Length: 300
Image (tube, rainbow, N blue to C red; front, side):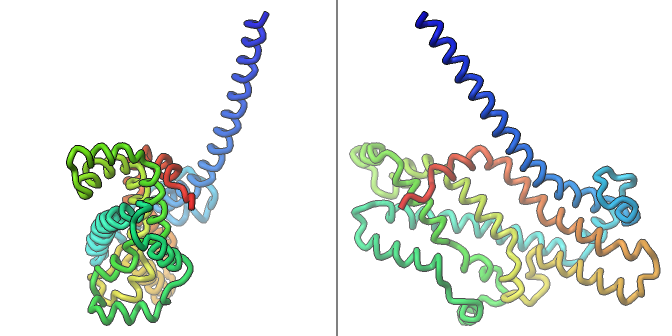
């Protein structure tokens, strides 16, 4: 009898789990579709002539394909220098940010570190206050970094939010592992590199993804600090392409319908060119993403 009751209870719990799973998958799938459809819409119209858009603006199935917008965007003289500059800013900036993050977070994660509370207070203040655009511009100019790619990297190298996440993650690591390494004769730097860093891979992958996306989308700082076109990042070059295309259309009086199509299609193609490369990075880091984000959650 008792076994029958337990069996019924387990069957009931199983159905509850199935129901909750169905609801969770349904809600997640619904929001995934909502997020994916606009990007599919952009890809479709970046590969379609403008006539298709005029005939059926909401269709997601292309009736004719053209790569004219991509040829125009990728044929622009500064597009490849924009890619090169963006790759440098993104990967060099992310590598420097991760090194600085680890070297800062590890000592601050130790409760016996002198001045820890005062330093953390200074970091938290930077989350709410900053110098502003004009003081930052004068600072960059005084450092001789105008028209220099390092002006795009150095100001955003380490943020307080990422630092707090990293500190909390390191705090959650078992201290017995570090103590064992110290007893075996390792110094602090060896403990950090050989013991702590391998355990921090999920949080480093998560924060690295945040950082590289931030550097990849750098736009406003480039307008302020970079005046030479050959120094522009990709986002600024694409803006220039779209603006020039629109200006040319107005100067030419919109003589042909195909000419009217260019600014719209070009915008769609520019979005794909700007977002597709960084989206390719995500699958390689996705398996670490949730683990790093949850375990590094703010707790203080």
